[in-house]
Amino acid sequence: MSTFTQKVLMLKQGLKDQVTKFKNKNFLDAVVAGCAIVAAADGSIDSQEKQKMTGYIGRSEELKIFEISSVIVRFNHYVDNYDFDPMIGKVEAIKSISKFKGKPDIAKVIVSVCCAIGAADVWIVN
Image (cartoon, rainbow, N blue to C red; front, side, top):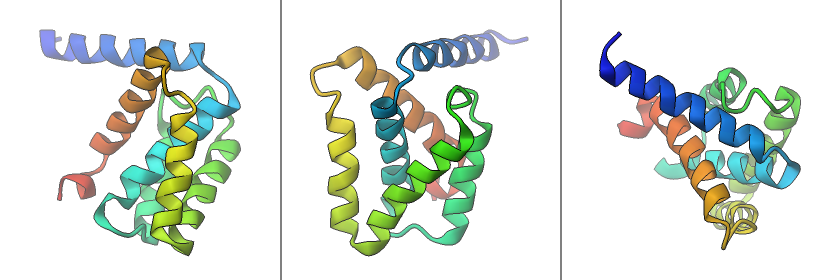
C-alpha cells in the first residue's frame, strides 16, 4: 500500500472517530445542512443530485453512526427549503451550521465531512 493511500486511510479513520465523538442532533443537522449547501452549489438541486447525495450519505463511513432514515429526513428538510426558495434554504442551512460558531474542533469536523461529500461526486468538479 502506498504512503498516500495509508495517509488517506488514516485521515478517514480520524474523521470517523471525530464524528462519533460529536454525535448529537445539532451536529447531524449541521452536517446535513452543509451537504445541502454543497448539493446546491451549482444553483439547483435536481433529483439526480438528491439521489447521489442521499446515496453517499447512506454509504458514508463518517455518517454511519446516525440512523440513515434520520439523515435522509434532515437532508430532505434542507433540500425542501432550497426548493422553496434558494435564499431561504441557504439561510436555514447556515443557521444550523452557525450553532457551532466558536467551537473550532466541531466546525472542522463539519467542514471535513462536507468536503468528503463534495469530493465524492464528479458533478461538483464540473
